[in-house]
Length: 515
Image (cartoon, rainbow, N blue to C red; front, side, top):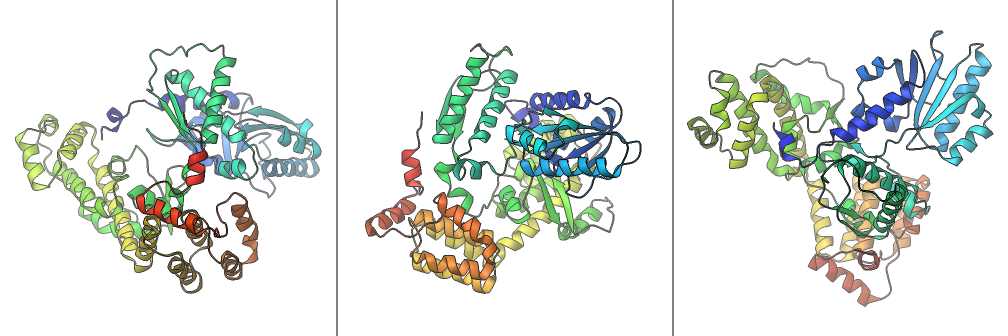
């Protein structure tokens, strides 16, 4: 409720810009068409254009890009591919076209839109596959995707690997192009600050793009941003290695959110069933094992609790639900009575429900737009999720891992003891490979390498399989896994850095340029 008033910049203009560009591309094919989407783009596209928008622009069928043959109805002759500019996608498209040429006498029209832009390598693959002459190629500059009213993402999961492992800085250029688009829509950034080599590269590219446009300020009135701060992920690679404990962070840790969508287990809804019934809201009894839940600004309850520590969200959700229930039961009260935090009604609610001053202001501000049934349903859903998270936090295995991570970061545990825990989770608990490797990477950074590293590398491969050899080798190449230094003083300094709370990625931090 009232979340739009709390943000400095309305990102709807960025969403509308991408939506308009997508509609323009769809208009390139007259009449009805089939839209084939890269799986990695399905949700980002959904965030800028819903199904009705696609239908209004001639899309009669939407499907996901797969390696199997593309089956079409006889009347479906126009196909538009919207895919990331990857060679693997080009080979799948070429297979589709060849299958149509060999199995059908119908004439098809193919339109391939590459995101964020076409590459020489992709076009070369299409030529080698012998299908380049059958298609029309275009670019779709979908770079910064607004996942929320205050969060944007490039949604390029491979960018760190490309930059650090392969030395391919193309993704940084796309970042600069996205920021240039922001300047065109919202005004130039008056001040640009940054930390890290990649951040400096993005700033330089942004300056060059500005010079190409003549160096003139963007014509969109007063700049909406005070400053731009760029931070290279490599200057703090430790943070992603530890377990997040905020509500949103823990949901991502357990359920793996993508594009602000969390596939929560059906048991979450089972926890909420009684709450729905208590609120007089019915819900279908049959639910799939996984339920996709959108966690964004359309959910005011989530916006209120997303940054809170997961252990603190239950009472906040309960108070919100009690307030919604009170509004349902007292429909005779005027909205003005709720909007005034000093009114007798709100003073009484503050006392009865133990509301904070911020909650009183937030709840009262949103009463006019309050959909009580929907709010009650969402509060019940988050209570179910919070209950699942509470069970996880109370699990001995989970709490041991969190405690170990904290002790490693604070320098309160010897490396030998920490490695004993790693062996335990490998041999007895059978934690997934990514979790064990994250823990080893954390220790490698904090302790400046891992003692008896070859032993743990060999055990990792024995326990989880030799198919992980390439992953371990790549982590070694970029310095995330390494042998312990023979210099005892260096190791002691690394432990002291953790104990004092300074940056544990000291070498990267010291060498990273800042301005």
